[in-house]
Image (cartoon, rainbow, N blue to C red; front, side, top):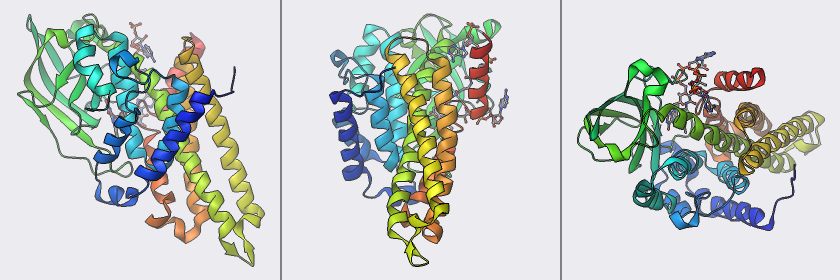
Length: 379
Ligand code: CAA
Ligand code: FAD
């Protein structure tokens, strides 16, 4: 495996870092406190090409590889994981899925504005009673000839109120179980489609998490993605790539915590010397850095496999499983290194610790990643 990044990949990373420091950092504490969706920040990310990074330029995308995408995700997540989760959903789940499996009409109508960052997309698989057990879909898309009649509720949907386009997974033929599930594109504002209140969360508080309710929503047949019954496979395929995105989000949260801890440890004095001179602090920093580096290698490995069109299911799950644990551990240590200052908002690390937790839950919990990895090993 070649770990030399190209000049273009390094330039993308630097551009993302610049954006994060200049446009995302100011106000990040207040947005978290007020649970404010980072609308202007995401608009800027769209203008700079971060919302459709891997999409072919003919559909308004950046035409970049997955490695560039994860490098950008890491930099943005170091500063604001509420921004990077929108970026991850839009890039990995919505744009990638539409580009890979959508019709030309769907790409013209939906992918182009999504990749340009003019509108935001959402991906709706989870339900009140079907999260990890994603094949047990209760939402139905009844086949009515030239349209589907959509009924049911989706839970925890990222970009839930800010999106214009939703990819909704629903059961059409229960007898066929997961092979009777479809993925259909629903537009905001369609009759019978309502959005619940924003969830009040532990972390990624700026992110827009909502339930979606569908009551006799008519969706034209041409909005189905792929063949009849392809919906569950579609969801799994996009989630394979999505898990690389969330792994890089976790990596960014962890490395953001390390950067802050290194700076603080050199500056803060106790017992007549910087706390960085105390071996107990050095060992914390060394453990954080080593684990972050290992997580980075797993993330890059998964991205390289995806870019070279190799099977990457196991590698993506491993990267997410490991990087999310590293994010949790590193952020807890970052708070410890900051002492009392770590426990208050101004020093950022308490937010990183709260944000880290979600990376072990969404896009498949750590337990589900273990199941995916074990199944791949035992194949
Ligand atoms: N890639 C491709 N196909 C996959 C797959 C994968 N990773 N995992 C399962 N499949 C396929 C299987 O091959 C099977 O297909 P066939 O029967 O046609 O061969 C089909 O899917 C069903 O798989 P299983 O029989 O293994 O089903 P299961 O019920 O035992 O387990 C599961 C499935 C792996 C647990 C799956 O339900 C799962 O991944 N659950 C987690 C759901 C999840 O990740 N949700 C994330 C929501 S989006 C989100 O969270 C976004 C965000 O936060 C920002
Ligand atoms: P459950 O599936 O009920 O799991 C509860 C516990 O049981 C977990 O620890 C789980 O690991 C464990 N468990 C379950 N099954 C097994 C098993 N077989 N073996 C061992 N342990 C098991 N979903 C979307 O579709 N789109 C989104 O945009 C989206 N964004 C989200 C944003 C946020 C902030 C949150 C909190 C969630 C989001 N989700 C989204 C939903 C997320 O993917 C689910 O919460 C997640 O998949 C877990 O499902 P659940 O909450 O129903 O937990």
